[in-house]
Image 1 (cartoon, rainbow, N blue to C red):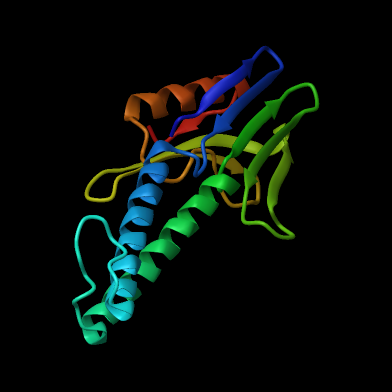
Image 2: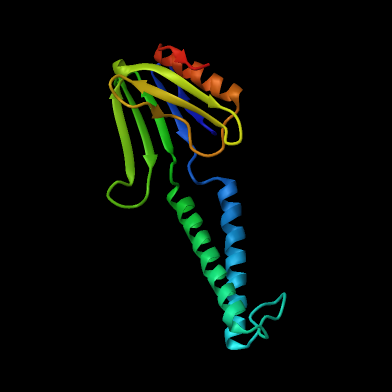
Length: 188
C-alpha cells in the first residue's frame, strides 16, 4: 500500500489510497494490448492472405484452425487490455481515509465502477471506533491489512488491495492512526 498522509494536524488526518492507477497496471495493459493486436493481425493476415504484420508473414497460414485461434487470442488480449486501461482511467479503488476531530467523523471514500454507485462514501462518528486492527498472513499469498473496527459493524479495510505493504510500514501506519484516534492497536 502506498498510503500517504497529506494533512496531519491536531484535528485532521487524511490518508490518500492509491487505486488502479499504478505503474504495474500500465505495464500489463500495454503488454496485453501489443500481444492482442499482434495476434489479431496475424489471424486477419491468414484470413485475407495478406501480410499485416511487420515482424513475420502469417498470410500463408490456413485460417481454420490456426488463423481462427490467433484471432480468438487477439480478441481476448485486446479485451483484457481495454479492461485494464478502463480501470486505470476510472482509478478503481482509489480514494482517501479522513479522520476529522473537528467534525468528529471518520470518512472512507473509494472510487468504483461507473454508474449509480460510482462514489463509495462511508461516514461514522469517531465515538463508534473501537480499535485499529492489523491482519498479517504470510505464505504464498501474503496479506497485510489495517482494519477499522466499528461498534456493531463489520471491520472496514483501510489499506488498498493488491501488493502487500511491508510489516514495518503497516506497524507505523497502524500506530500513527491509533495514536491520532486514541484507540488501541490490535493484531501486532
